[in-house]
Image 1 (cartoon, rainbow, N blue to C red):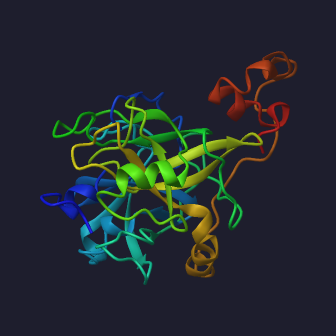
Image 2 (image 1 turned 30 degrees about the vertical axis):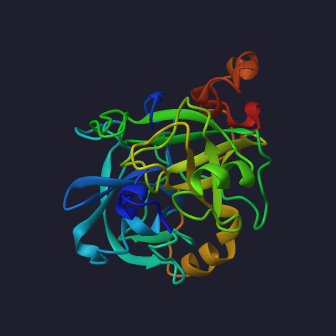
Image 3 (image 1 turned 180 degrees about the horizontal axis):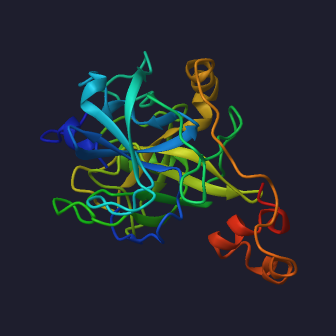
Length: 292
């Protein structure tokens, strides 16, 4: 049950106070477009599969109206790495409910495979049931509005949010919609940064053992994107079996580069101390950075 005067349409959209991301530093991020217009984010999880929020596609299931753009940095305009793909299939979680927003997850099958590169690649998935401890800081990314009621971001935004405990989140956001600990993950609420309209479906990732893992899918928050409220995500670790079931078979394999340094010895050896700081070092020095 929502508060009086609070629209579920507003709640279901939700980077405020973020900063411009380094171009192509989040290579799994995609722009989901409806009739050519950006409506949501998404994450590339396999060669031809994207995961996003169910509410982004549930009301308009016609696959011909959607395209997925990979390799984008600006919401408008193009880059030389940018490609647009039609959809072959949309699978919305059967238990998704637009009233309580539980199970807010969908997977999209692309019409053809994507070749992995330095600029377009998949994100790792967590183990089924694995949870992040409260207080841990993770990255949210998206092209959503930078202030409530304002304009959507032109450049991909990123912000750091701390994972919240369920009780704190329920105390604040529970006034809007009941927070379900099984299917939802909360972060932010510190008055600093958060998600906003247009960020829905985007990624909430953390670096674990040298790789970025998708922990959440942007789902909902305060209608005016208030940062003293929490941004709520679909908890990805709760849906691993479902994702694997829906994306198994009838799929392509992403072409990836072998696990080796791309730069001549001893350049990567000298730069290995920057592996945790610079994404381009991790990409060009995979073996030395142990990032593959």
